Length: 131
Image (cartoon, rainbow, N blue to C red):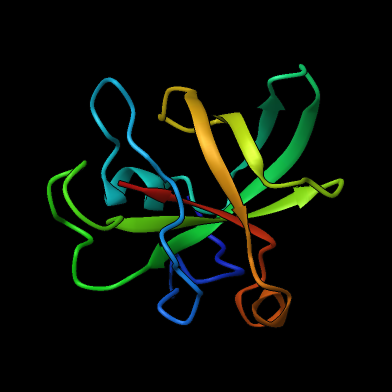
């Protein structure tokens, strides 16, 4: 099996303005940073509360600081997930499904916009943080 990486699996997201973005903490077990890293590069979809669907690609895990392995739900978010979406997607709450990955669909995920000045450097336009 040949793996082709067009983008790093983990990118430095500490330069993002992280003024308390809403974190996603599911009712059940929280997927680990390794589970998200395994689906880096995979396609997927966002589904809004109105039923509209948008195509996405999971680009990378965003390193936000030293909490990447901390217990979920306590303190600041542990890490983020960088997305590229087509067509243009507005920030909001979405269900996230990942094609061909081992992750179950994610429900009611708060999706945030990457500041315009950082999109070119990071390669993605949206992100969500995992609490």
